[in-house]
Length: 131
Image (tube, rainbow, N blue to C red; front, side, top):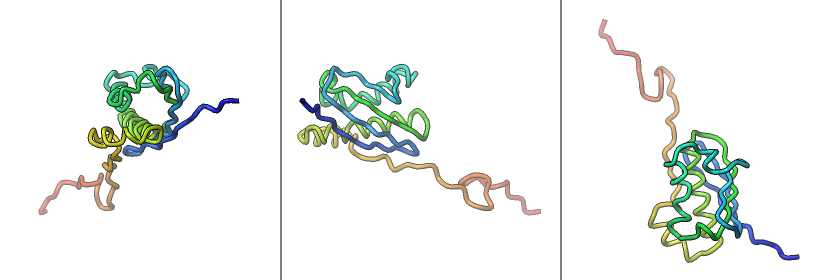
C-alpha cells in the first residue's frame, strides 16, 4: 500500500482561519468542498489564492484542499494564500526564500479594532458641543 504525502499549513488573515492540505495531483483547488471559482465569485480573489503556486510554478504539481471559516471573502482568500505558502514550504523547504520575499509567509496582523465604551464605534464619538 502506497501512502501519498499530505502537507498541511494553517493560514490566517483578519478573522479568517484556513486549514490547507496539499497533495500530489493535477492542480485542482477545492475550498469548503466546492470548486475555487464557484466559492470565490471574483477573479481577483481566485488570483490571490493561486499566487504562491504560480510564483513557485507548482500549479500542476499539487492539489489543494482548503477548509476556511470566519471573516469575509477577501480575508478568507488571504488566509488560504497564507496556508498554501506554509504547506508548500513543508513540502519543499527550498521554496521558502521565494515565498518570503513575495510576502506570502508573513501573517497579515491587521485586525478590526475593538469598540471602546463611551464611543459609537472603535474611534467614532458623538459630535462635540460646548453647550
